Image (cartoon, rainbow, N blue to C red):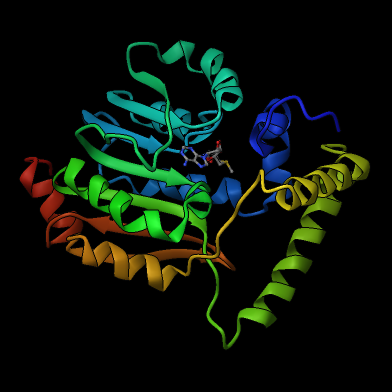
Length: 255
Ligand SMILES: C[S@@+](CC[C@H](N)C(=O)[O-])C[C@H]1O[C@@H](n2cnc3c(N)ncnc32)[C@H](O)[C@@H]1O
């Protein structure tokens, strides 16, 4: 594969939307769940922030489901944002794309913040400050939904990794048999990822869900829970003040 950009995502942006659901079996289900977990009704007005928005797949699902939601989406990769730009045209006036590193991004005031499959690129030493900025930006009782790969505990981690690998393998075989991708392009993509990692251009960290939960509590989130998991793919929901969903809706006068 020719390397046009200097980053992994910069090079795979063109095929990201087609291959990501094939390479990562829980991806699509996780995005469905993320939308389900947003504590608003379909006609409610609210502001959201998407951190590491990529090609805007998660944000578009949110805009489709919540017709009065408005959002700010940030990503550090210009090629991913270039794919996102024409896709968000039908939602113009409701979404703003920003090119920035979320580690230093001034998170705008919002009711809901979320991130899908991006925090495993954030170094452990930057997580606490980032969670604190998200908590500060959220309105009282606001909600942060974090969907990402999170490492599994030592006792069953190795066993689960082997199961997850078989699950991925079967999922990819079905995709190839259905004509959604070829085995060659899947192999080429995995090889390219390995090469970019070895070259230090695709850094991933193994944060555990328990570590993330502890950090969120430490920066002041009042109610934090792991609410969904398929092997290492995990969703954590965190509310900024006690009372969770009930208090969130009550403070906004929602039924
Ligand atoms: C696996 S993709 C996920 C994209 C999108 N959230 C989705 O679910 O399809 C990870 C994204 O995180 C972005 N990213 C990684 N580190 C980042 C950072 N420090 N600041 C902003 N974006 C970042 C990458 O550029 C990439 O677009």
